[in-house]
Each structure stands twice: as C-alpha cells, then as structure tokens.
Amino acid sequence: MDTKHYMEQLGQQARKASRAMARANSAQRNRALSLIADAIERDADALRAANKLDMDAAAANGLEPAMLDRLALSDKAIATMVEGLRQIVALPDPIGEISGLKFRPTGIQVGQMRVPLGVIGIIYESRPNVTVDAAGLCIKSGNATILRGGSEAIHCNRALAKLVKEGLEGAGLPADGVQVVETTDRAAVGALITMPQYVDVIVPRGGKGLIARLMAEATVPMIKHLDGICHVYIDAKADLKKALDIAFNAKCHRYGTCNTMETLLVARAIAPAVLPELARLYATKEVELRADAEAKAILAGYPHLADATEEDWSTEYLAAILSVKVVADMDEAMEHINTYSSKHTESIVTEDHSAAMRFLREVDSASVMVNASTRFADGFEYGLGAEIGISNDKLHARGPVGLEGLTSLKYIVFGNGEVRQ
Image 1 (cartoon, rainbow, N blue to C red):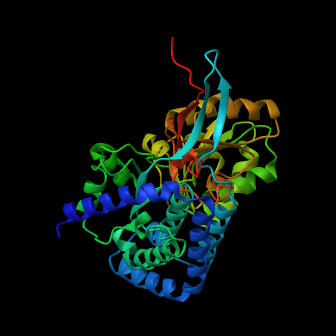
Image 2 (image 1 turned 180 degrees about the vertical axis):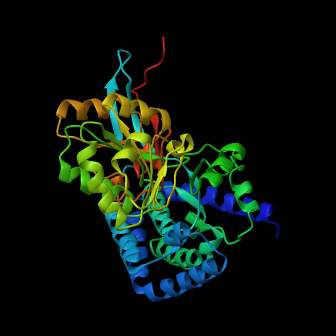
Image 3 (image 1 turned 135 degrees about the vertical axis):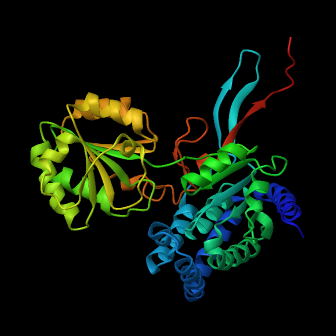
C-alpha cells in the first residue's frame, strides 16, 4: 500500500470513529483513560525497553542533545504520563455543556453548546509522552485523532499505541479513535496536512523547520506556535533573591523546551547588583552569555562571555546560551519583548504592583507572568491535566491547549412553535 492511500484509509477510519467518540458518554471516556493509565504502569518495563531501542538508534544517528533529552522516557516521565491521564479523568467533561441561554423577544431561547472539533491530526518530534498526552485529551474531549510521531520515537510510539487501543476497546470505544501512523515515510505528513475531508485541525509540536514546512503546505487549519523566544525582565524594584531564583530556573531547568528563557532583560538601576550574582550561578552550568555592551561591561571576567548580535535577540537557542541586555526601564523592556518575542511566554520580576499590572496588560504574548519562571508555561502546570500543544495564535486557542482548546461552540435554539414574522 502506498503512503497516500494508507493515510487516506486512516483518515476515513478516523472520520467514522469521530462520530462514535462524540456520542460516547463521559463515563466511557473516563474509563478508557483509566485503563490506559493502568496499562502504562503495568507495562512500564516494556516501554523503557522500546525507548532504549529509539535512544540507541538516535544516538548512533547523531541526534542533537536537545532532541535526545526530549526523546528519553525516564521513570519520572512515565509517572507523569500516568498522572496526567488521571488528572484528565478528574477534569469536568466539557462536551455538551450549554451556556448563555437567553430568551429573545420572539420567544425562542438561544445559547451555545460545547462540541468536539472532530478529527485532530497531531504531528510531533521526539517526546513519546506526547502520544499519551494527545490521546488522553482527544479522548476526553470526544475527538478522534491521528498521531504522527517522529521516526526517532517509532518503537516507543508503537508500544504506547497498543496500550491506548487496549484502553479504548476496554471502554467500548472504537480502536480507531486514536491511530498512530505506522510508517516513517515523510510523505505521510504531507498527506495528513492536506486531507480537509477527513481532518478538521492539525496540531504540530516540533522544531521550527517542521512548523515552517506545515505553515507553507497545510490546507487543514492549524493550532501552533513557531518557536519559543521567551524573556524574563528583572525590574528595578525586583526582590534580588526572587530574581536570582527565577532567572536561573527559567534558563537552566531544561534547555530543550519552548518555555525556556532565551533572553534576559535587566533594568539599569539593578543590573550591577543582579548580573554578577547571576553570572556565578550560570557559571556552574557553563552557560554562554551573549551580552550587549552595557551588560558585558558588568559581566567582565565571566568565562563564557560573547558579544550579542542583532540575530541573537530573535534566536531560540534550546541550549546553554542566553542573550542578556540592560534596559533603561520597563518601557524599553516591553518594547524589546514586543519586537523580538515569538509571543510564547514572558515574565517580569518586580515588587511594584502597578508595574506588574502594566506588564500583564501590555505584553502581547500567550502567557505573561509576574514573579514566576517561564518554565511554568505548560498545560500540566496550569492544571489542564496535560496539553496537546501551545498556541501563540490569537484565534480559537492561545497558550497551552487543553480540553477546551479541542472543542468548539455551536449555537442551539429552543422554541415552542415560533415562526419568523
């Protein structure tokens, strides 16, 4: 079977399954999620073995460290997958929820009902946990899904797909409600993003190259973000300890994630106090600092120091590299952020409530924080149970996309024989 025909078959099966997924009751969907969580715990050893096959092959093929980090399925990652599924079970079921009912002068009653999107295609690289997060959210929200993971995670994704199907069938739901693309042929992606007759929305999770390709070729609508150029601004009225903790965590907790800080902005009034202290922390992780002239003068003697270029301000490093700039005040910081940010996540460190509220209002990003690390910009941390991706678009869904982002609203009307005059 050629790839195009194979993908069309998946699409047809998904469309048929989507109708059964949409009409399933909440108990069935929750039962499926619980069974999948149980199966993951039961087969944890088999999942680790499958992941080792992927990790060994990826290392042999020279996969970059950031991608290897995403590919690894640790004990903690397995436990997080299970916990994420159980959190989704505990979330209120959004499907069928009716809101905004109002009587019109004609006598009809008009409101809105929350409904599934239908069939969701999800394309992602590495990160086998996405297979479970995506499947769980789609099941809970009454959607069918086609999952196309990266070829580097094929063994682990196949093992997880088997457990997901087991859970669906055990709850009386169609096994085709969640389908994992079995082929590693790149043509499968091209087919998936150009099947609007079968697929209602595409959610890509991957590197800039993948997202750019999909933006150029897709004929199916997408929920996406292109990259994560995230900022922390340390205000003149920041608490020094909070500033050190947040700026270190935002960069060094993990390098290969889209919510990692890539540019640090520091108010001129506090820069001489905070930058040398941060430099001592960053030195323990051998972080390269690419600094503007003013920051570089303060950081003189730091062993991993370079001049920042114009390109640095718009670069997502996903590595132990950080751009650093001294700014006059919050206005200059916000101007820099709104110019160079990818509109993913930004944070201000300040004890000035008025400044914090201005920052929240005026910074145009999907997540804006006060006195917190950008690493919190995540569906799990936001209490969504898990996330299917992060969107920096302004239509439909923005920020971490959980259950509600995978639904739509339709108008409903209740009448009692009224006719339009």
